[in-house]
Amino acid sequence: MADGTAERGLAHRLVQEARASKNITIRIAEKDLELARSQAGKKGLPYQTYIKSVLHQALMNER
Image (cartoon, rainbow, N blue to C red; front, side, top):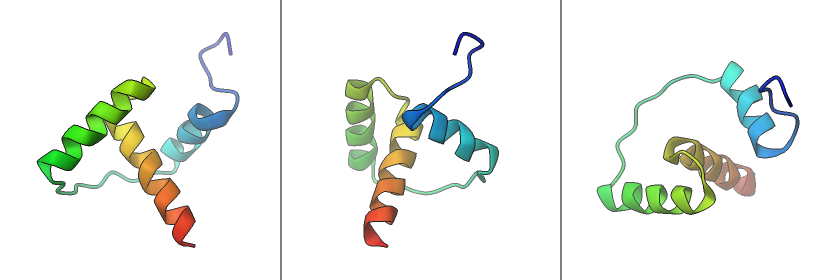
């Protein structure tokens, strides 16, 4: 939207989840982090947002 808020899709979902999310700390292999950063860059996303999205998709697929 013109006011800077997200309307739909991934951005909207991430904004909604950010309001009800909790910060955590995890350890991740350097190679996995490098790969995540590379893949996030190709999609034009910050790597932490990308990792969150990939984790969410994996969890939903396991349900």
